[in-house]
Structure formats: structure tokens, C-alpha cells
Length: 307
Image (cartoon, rainbow, N blue to C red; front, side, top):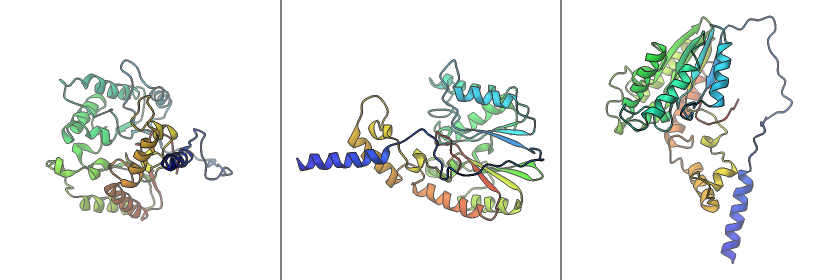
């Protein structure tokens, strides 16, 4: 009887801790909002992450809305697709049974930019690495560039970092964070086509770019967020405690145990409790403090956060 009471007590604690709301959460409800007057917008960025899961034959409402926004955008604009461009596992070979679904994801997203006057850039996410690693990534790069032209999938060749000059006062630094987080033993040719062949050299290059662009607005686009209050940051909704593996059958106690293990163990490199993820986050954030105009833009967690 005591064991049952203990289990019930633990479950209630997890339940209360997991209660979530879809209402926007603000640290300070009284925060003032202001917009500069008598100034022109120099450049606009349109951001979308994890767009690669539209049902066959149609597109998600988010992609539809994004397309409308791009149609009305000026030529001084950049559309950034922030990784996980194809679910569940990147772009497979042409004969693969998932190829049709994968191509549909890329077609839906590239078609959303057909009336866009600005520049379009896709960056890789972890799911884009899940089809034969570097080979699948290069397949996706070629597919997108065949649709949209050169330099629309960056960084190229599975390399870790690329700088894009936006204007005299704005620069874009693109990082393939999954390159850093991957187990390189599984990808022996990962850096064959890159000048940067170690994580240390990558961090040196990032530091150099940050310092060289002091005083400029520096947009750092990377799939994995450096800060997040979402699932990948260890914040779980009640649904994830009850249905840890999806489906319609609840697993209440085991579900809470599973989320606890994931939150504290860092067992997957997609969560920011992971040792390699923490290492990347600490170094990037520290180096970025050399420039007081750095803005991170990321995908990964399927929600909208402004931190």
C-alpha cells in the first residue's frame, strides 16, 4: 500500500511540474515596446525552422503563411530555412521508398519562395544528417541548388561555417551545428572537402569572424538553439509525460521517468543537456561576447521563442 501511495505521490509531483499552457509567457508583462521613428529598414530576415513535414499533396499552414509574407517582402530581404528541412531522415537515394515524401518537403519549401524578391538560404539540421550522413546532406544541397541556384544551401559540402555579407552594417554567419555534434567515427570522410578539419579550428574561425565584425549587426544562424525553454531544453508538457512515445495509449509513470532521464542524462545530442551540446553552447556563447551585436536565430524546438 505504501509503495502505491509513493508512486501516486511521485506521479502527482511530475504532473504538477509538467502543467503547460499555450498562452504566451512573458518574463515581464509590463515590458515597453518601441520602434525607431524616422528610420528606414535596411534589411529584413524571414525565419522558419523545421518546415519539412508537410503531408503529401499539400503544405502546412505555416508554409502557406510564410509564402504570403515572402510575396510582400522587399528585395532587401533574406529568407532563412533553419534546418530539419526533411522529416524524418533527410533526402534518401532516388530508389528509396521515402524519396517521394522527402522531395515533396523540399518542393513545398522552395516553391514558397517563387515570388520572393530577396535571397533564400537553407541550412542543415540534425534530421537532414539522418540519411547516410554527409552523402544525404550533399544530395539535399544539390537538390535545393538545382531549384534555387548556387549558394542557397549553406554551408556547402557538409562543412561547418560560412559567412555571408548582407550589407555594410550587417553580416550573417551560418553554422552547421550537427557537424559539431556528430560522432565523427561514423563519418570518416566528414571533412575531406573542407578547409576546417577539427572542432578547434572551427571555433578559431568563429572567433575570428566575431572579432572582425565588431560593430556590425551579426546574425548567427544555427539549427540548435544556444538557449531554449522548449522540449530540447528539458521543458515537457503534460502530453509528453503521458505519451512519451506518441500514440494514444498513456504510459503515465514510465513516461515521467523517461522525460526525467532525458532531461538529466543528456542521452541524445539533440538535447542541450548533452555533453557535446553543452560544450558547443559554452564556447559559442563565450566567443560571441566579443561582439555586442550578436543575434542567434535557430530552429529545432517546434515553437516560437524570443529570449
